[in-house]
Image 1 (cartoon, one colour):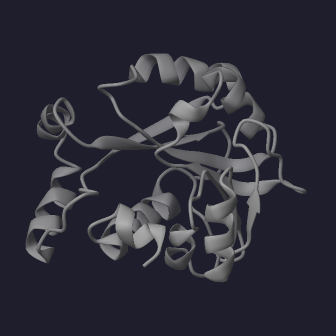
Image 2 (cartoon, helix red, strand yellow):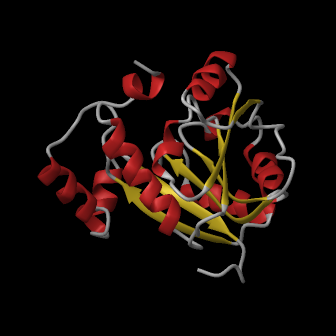
Length: 196
């Protein structure tokens, strides 16, 4: 069993929903676009992004080895310092923003090599959205789209229950009530003028 299968109760459902939002939130991604996945673990997300060029980065040699055994293009590196050999269409960073030494510097670094968007998750009980928005703006990402992400990581749900939770992501006030107690936002940060 790999890290992905132990970290998520239903890895397929969780990562498929995450991938769906990576593709559609903010500027859309298209076949052939490159996605850089920072703090990628064993690269489990790659399997849910068909048609895109996937490059993963992780600071743990064991994770990099595991990802490579899964057939993914993953390199050893720290999300604070890594820079891809060429610009990427999108950069993702999940369950890892808190590893940034200084959040605004991290966003500025990512903005330097990301052409379309940065997609990441944000726990609103841990970070104030307005503070994160200000840091993104200072880094050059002047647009931010937030979407509640109601997929549990540690337990699997029947398909009907998952469908209800996904519908609640668009419920406005009710979604904000749920976010006060559980779950996170999926965020897409981009620049004005990038096609959405």
